Image (cartoon, rainbow, N blue to C red; front, side, top):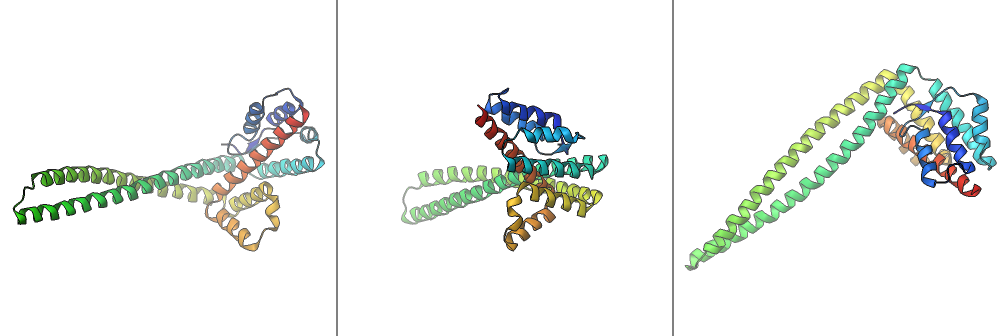
Length: 258
């Protein structure tokens, strides 16, 4: 994860628009590389290089948009020290890990609910069989088959309870990991500066979704809340949108030039 945008890779990607790289997949691969995957790296590129890149776009509005985008990304990169960049990279990595842990615990929680439901069904079967056994005894009827069936269901329930216990153990373990990662993220936010992280998150959100600048106040508040509660996730989402936008624009221009 990097906070840099390598203009040399951008140049390679835009050159593919001219037809040197006819494969659409190749164009998308180049576009993915130019943002370093999840994050953005900003290197010192000459203004003429940036102008040459945006000049390859025929649409005037697209040229203007990407010119502003590259300038803004460069400004963000230049506003951070090398130490802050490294720490920010750690925050982005931890944010991604937190998403994975939340997805994992969601799966475990779903499994737990299903296992509890299955256990309740098996217990109901055991209770129903016990009533049949009691009635058979009262009536003086054979009940060996009922007892055998109840034993089988009890064994199935015991196995289900064992799996449930293991799942609950995994949930507890994952919850501890989540708490640890959240603590690390909180420490990183403090080390960089909460206001600085929020500012980056808000600026990238504006860059990635400029059409939402005039969105309803309620939606704006929701976005602001996300930037405050999970700023690194907000940063990652914005960078992903920027990457997809650039990839789509490159592909559109490639198709037009074929």
